[in-house]
Image (cartoon, rainbow, N blue to C red; front, side, top):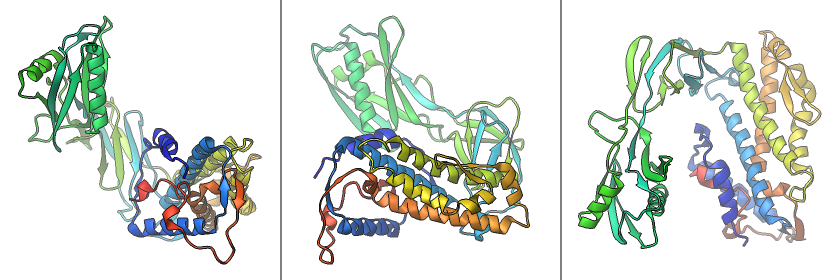
Length: 431
């Protein structure tokens, strides 16, 4: 079996930091459905070889992630609480000053439709805890060769860190080693070296968490092992001293004082606010007008559709993709409905991408035309969603490959223990 290591490395470096939406959460039945689809795909798949394996891995991951983005958008535009015409009228939150307070609508359509606008004034942002150690000359040897340890205590537990110092290691070598130990522990604390510009460096530890509860004095503490050597080493490093304590955010909503541990929080299960900087004037939070909201919702679907076309274009002329297979598959969805889409303002460009003509759309959502418009949009949404589901299950279908042997028709069987490592890749978001 081909090695999957490099595929995971590419996936983690490219997509692991993307923001996770609530549509990335799934039930056991969803995972079972995906698994069954993978098994069926492999049951019918011939044996093939891939000429350019490394590039094919990356291309397949890009295809799958683009398809999943479409699936998430389709899910967000499928209203569980209303008719199909309600899906594209999903509320869109807006901030009067996005540079100071960002906002996103996180409701599911079940909340009160008469939610009023409100104003928010940001006084202080929530901040993390930072411990900055002593600045040590990079080339000096401030610690003797030997073994040392210290405890890092967080709200979730106490963790011991052990490290050795050799005769050849200078101060910067030791600080770099300690930063690597802390960062690889994944305890919600980041470590970095800071320089004073004069040949000295210090180790800085910063919590990912912000804010403090009433019964907390710190988010983490550091204490040396009881041995004299470890205590002396901690005195040299100085990372046990809190330089910048954590603080809660402070703000007012409609004049009433509030605070939060984090700079991102929800209001009434409808708004997700992100405080970005102290405000100079009150920021108004509310909903966009209906026509603008409809255009924004359609734009999210158009953007996801155009994104997968961009992925298809990126390697269409190389020996990695199976020609224009992916492009033709996706474009066939819009071209089969081109007349009805253009009638409501979704215009097609020469390269197959879509864009919105807002003047035509504004006419299409007038009361007398709205039902037909939303029916057209829902049909397009569902068609793209079905195609994206198929693409995400087997992205290798769009990779250039050489068929070695076909399975015996009518006598093939499922091989669940050797299911393709690329078909339906990366199921972590289903678990």
